[in-house]
Image 1 (cartoon, rainbow, N blue to C red):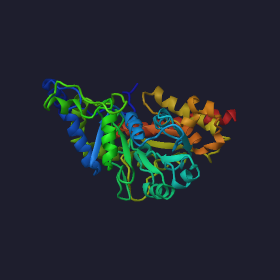
Image 2: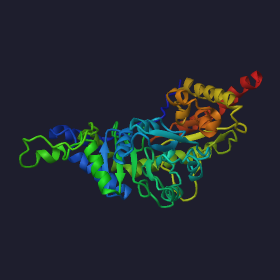
Image 3: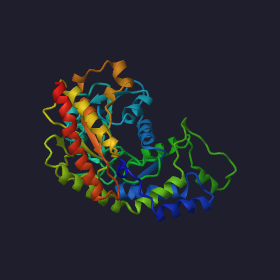
Image 4: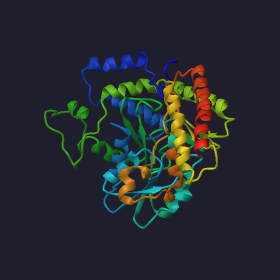
Length: 400
C-alpha cells in the first residue's frame, strides 16, 4: 500500500516548539500574557477592537449567546447543515434552535431562506461560514436590521475569509472562531470571540472566568493580591491556557503561508477534478476570499432528488470506503443536525422540510487538504476518486 494520506495534518515547526517551551520555562501556564498576545493578534487580523480567547469554538458560541442574553422562550435561527455545536449552543442556553435549509451550491444559508424561518419568538440569526466560505453577510445584516434581530457568526472555519471586503465580525454582534487541528491555525483545542461591542466583550471575559470581575493574571500583579477575586455572576471556566496561546501566536506568524498552501491545494483540485460532471467542486462567489478550511465537493452524478438520495448516498459511501482501503482519508463535509437522532427524533423532522441539508449530509465529500500536501499525493487522490466512481457505479447500476 502507498503511504497513507490523512484528511488533515498539523504543521508544527521550530517556532511553535520554542514558543511552548518558553511558556513551560516561565512557570506561568494558565491564562496570562500569551493569551493576551494571542487575542491582540487575532483582533488585528480581524480589524476588531476585541478578541476573547476561550477553550473551543463551541465555547465561543455558547458564551457569546449567553452574553447576548439568549434564554428560555427565545428562538435562534441556525443552518440545518452544520456541525452540531451550532445548534447545541443555542439549546444549552435554554432557547430553541430553529433550523434553516441551505443553498446546496455554497452550503450556506441565504437571507431569503432565513426570512421564512422568522417568528415572533426569534431573537437572532447565527449564519455559519461553511468550510470557510462566508455567507452573504450584507444581505443577512439588512434582513436582521429590518426585523430587529441580532446577528452572530459561526466563523469556526473562516479565519482569513472575506466577502465584498467584509471580514467575519464586522457586520454582526460577534464572530466565533475555532482553532481545532483541522482549522487553518491550531492551538490543539481553542476558540475566539471577536466583537466590536465593548459591553459584550466585557461580559464574555467574565463568563469565561467563573463570572470573575478580574483575571488571575490581573490579580497577581495588583495590590492585595492575597484576596480572592470578586464574582459578579454565575459562570464556568472556559479559559485558554498560555501554553495553547503561545502555540497560536507562533501559528499566526505563519498564517499567510498556511493560507497560500490551502489555496494551492484548492487550485490543484479545481484543475484535476473540474471536468468531472458527477462531482461539483467548491463554488466561490465573486468578491469572496475562500480560506479553504476544507475542500468540500458535492457528489452529483445525476439530478439530485430525495427519491434517489438513498441510492446515491450508498454510492458516495462506497466510493469513500474504496479510498479508505487505499489509505486515503476523506470525510462527509459535515453533518445535518436535522438528520441526527438528538434533533430528528423528538421533532419528528422529515426530509422534505430540509431537502438540501438532507442531501448535503449524504452527498458531500471532503478531500485531504493541508499545508505541505504534495502535488503527487493530490493527483493520487484525484485518480483514486475517479477510479472509485466508475467502480462503485457498476454494482449500483446492476442493482437498479
